[in-house]
Image (tube, rainbow, N blue to C red; front, side):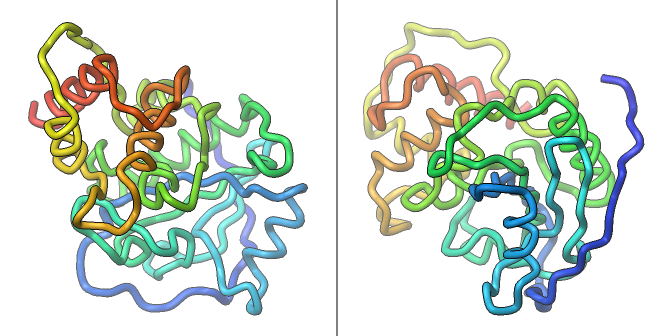
Length: 236
């Protein structure tokens, strides 16, 4: 993918505070889930709403910065990843303009995804964020969220060095539901009893990210093979 010059517009939000101790080592992708970009921008900057993200990426590729990366934005809510319960303190949040499932989910625009990749590459150059810690909102809050959703082009991001996508998937290996749940935990997902949400929601979030063609909330051999490939990539 060719380099692109980011068009970053400062649109500050008052909704931020100090980070807790610890590295900034998680990158969370969201969709805005509102009717228009301007509605989303207004909400992210509204002190009454008490929510924010570090960045919002519009469909034309314009990037709005709301919160300095050194500060804790309020984008993840009640969430969990790889033992981290205060995901906001450890993460940078990127909102991506899309109406979402509630208002008419649509494919993401090419200029928008190019900007997301370029922005993420810049962020990864500033922070030591492992590929397995580039996640969706639904990955860290599977009982509440579906974003950025099954139309989000995770393979395209991985090709640009942002996040992880399984390459060689070996099917036919033995698996069972218990080992699948344990492997979800090993990868970073919160599974009972570590969290209160149902395992089916976690499986659906995994499928939405890594097997978007069939989201059932029920593990199967294909999911098990994908997860094994991800874990192998993490340990390489």
